[in-house]
Image (cartoon, rainbow, N blue to C red; front, top):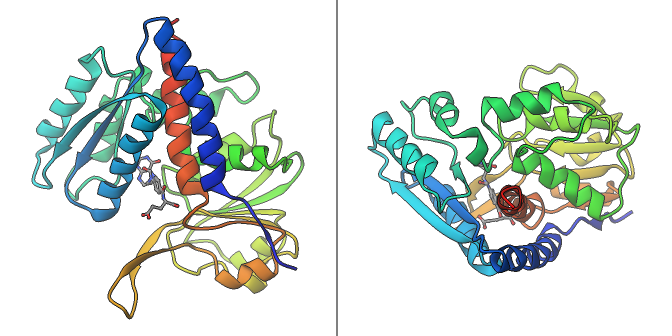
Length: 291
Ligand SMILES: Nc1nc2c(c(=O)[nH]1)N[C@@H](CN(C=O)c1ccc(C(=O)N[C@@H](CCC(=O)O)C(=O)O)cc1)CN2
């Protein structure tokens, strides 16, 4: 068996084309959506992701606003940037690029974002709504990587109803919140959330119809763990330097998984570009809510 590809890059392009039409309609009504980013420090990955977000904005017609701070920025300086974006009427929504440098209280920073401008869906108010509203439709912003996974599967018409989903990784941006989304009444999956303390990970993965690997541990998920035909989403991102001295991205899933899985999202080219598309979608939806 050779797995079919869940092409996140192509799907994200389709979504961006759809968003460009929605942005044009907003502009006709005098509303120009604006995305803000707060980037602290010089982590090459974060710099690349933020640059990608601004390029995406340009592509779909969204204004973008940058708050770039040095790695030495104090907590107060970061909170100052947050305050400026909270107050800026040109900023519809914004994100604080994670991770923040050591010594910065990430929770305090995320809690200082105006929940109505939380394009990342990571403010406790928005995560709380996700936790509490299991049945009702949610109109507040949702975290981008979890929605990226679900939207990618939806666009490929892969139904999650009644499916067993193994999620590996308990980080804020993916693992913790994807379980809440997947178990919503409208999606109806059953989730096993695994982490470094999990005993018997291979056996649990072997029972899953769908595997979401978001541990950031290169090659953690072995091909021989997978149920034949499983749907595999490789979300974890690690930058490794090859023998040629060049840095490249490696996912959590053993490349041989393509011989066992039924569907596989590549990394790069899978959930990453979809995450960026979901961020734009959040901003456009926030702007439309002002109509
Ligand atoms: N505030 C947030 N910080 C972080 C998040 C997040 O959702 N919110 N997630 C990740 C980084 N991330 C989004 O910010 C992200 C990661 C990867 C990509 C992406 O498009 N990757 C490309 C490859 C790009 C490359 O060559 O390096 C791909 O997968 O094809 C976009 C966004 C941590 N921080």
